[in-house]
Length: 271
Image 1 (tube, rainbow, N blue to C red):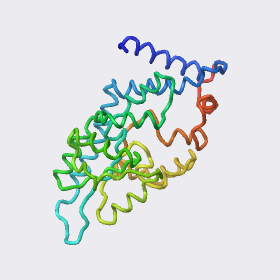
Image 2 (cartoon, one colour; image 1 turned 180 degrees about the vertical axis):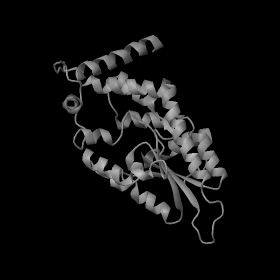
Image 3 (cartoon, rainbow, N blue to C red; image 1 turned 90 degrees about the horizontal axis):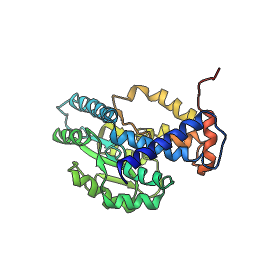
Image 4 (cartoon, helix red, strand yellow; image 1 turned 45 degrees about the vertical axis):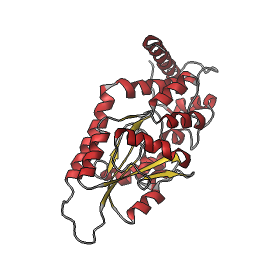
């Protein structure tokens, strides 16, 4: 698809999103606001310098935290480790999001699996240089991802393609089903002192955020606010995350039903 066609498609999707917010009558086409919106956020991730700046900012803060760690360790101290997510934290999967949106579809496991099999996701700005810097300081890196166990090999291939440190079987923790990362973090903590947690979703940091309610997630944020920028490093991801099902009432409804959530958004009063 040429760039002109892609631009027109993106603008059309955004226009539909804005019109829907403006109070237009609901039609069978309204669910496309979800897909058009994700197409536009993917464009922002792929093309904007602002998105890259946010990623660089996050990894600059992470670098400062690593450099501030005591260099001398007492005998018996656990070695330092960083626990990081992969998708939208290290690797950019927006090509899959664009592909799905242009086909009028949202995420599905079959297409996601085919994308992962290509091991072709690019890196986020600042990610590789940070992890290499941390490794050079003797800090081990553990990749805790909710990619399924059957996608382990492809995940390793993608990380190894760019030379990420500790991209091996021991340091990659996938899942066989549960999305809760807390058990895997606790397993690492048995032998290591986790100095940083890095991710794009609040569940990457603490089990407090596993609640499916918006109010519970925001309450957990209040309890842990002091950790962000210190032990928690957050990457921007407007495309997807646990915030989305929380907005929809704790689940992903069919696309035709998601327009109901629009009524919850704050909009300018017209006078």
